[in-house]
Length: 308
Ligand code: GUN
Image (cartoon, rainbow, N blue to C red; front, side, top):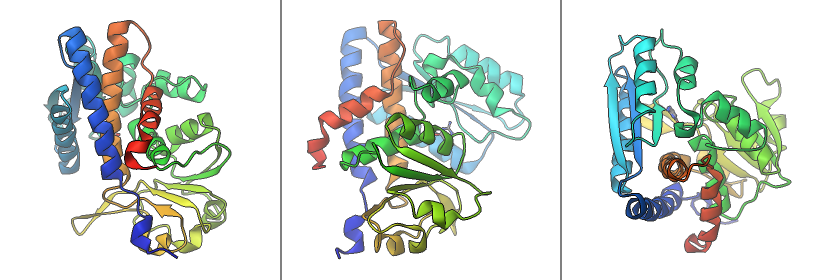
């Protein structure tokens, strides 16, 4: 059996390749339209993790040649103020993509805020129209973490088609949209959650196991079919360090591959946010609906670059 470290997938490296592609596309956009693709991020309140994530997204935009602006509203902001800002940003000519960092303070209904977005600028893919078209099998803008998971699997030459995929977690950000995306890519999908009675029975069925429960160390080798691919989306701070939902090295002893935390899915999420923003920019200028899927196809075209 190979050493367990050899089974860890390198999300940082794959994400860096995607960011290079994004940069090339952003440069082409600028040459064609005389401006950069633009992202506006809104953060409400002072949650330190959210502020860090949003700063990281803005920095990633800068490095990839995108325009970005960050709007920081106080925790006391009214829901109507947040909605008014989102509507205004969706009408700005420099802004092709808008996101509101989740979570928002109690008293603000995130679903109402997201629903106020222009679906064509909803680079998080959270608007009900984008949710609906994904589940109808005609995806437009797809949420960044599910898209990043698909891109990572494809980069390592793993196709979900015909595979049994078990997803642990039913959040609107990861579990639910990933189920729709996996179905679109011809997987047989099971979604488990906190009320699932026999979790291990469902996870042991999986050829591809994706864990997005937010419960550190939830998944051990007893949950994993030998030879499965295990994708760890969990990221919880424990004593100041990020910890995943999967006991990485124990699981790597039985799995074919495991994504580490940090350095697995996380960097892919940011790369896909940039990718969605560039796609939204081209679509807006070309008068068509944006399609996140173009980035999966673009990734396939250069898969050899990372030896998949
Ligand atoms: N909080 C955690 N993940 C995400 C994400 O993908 N988008 C937004 N807007 N907030 C998040």
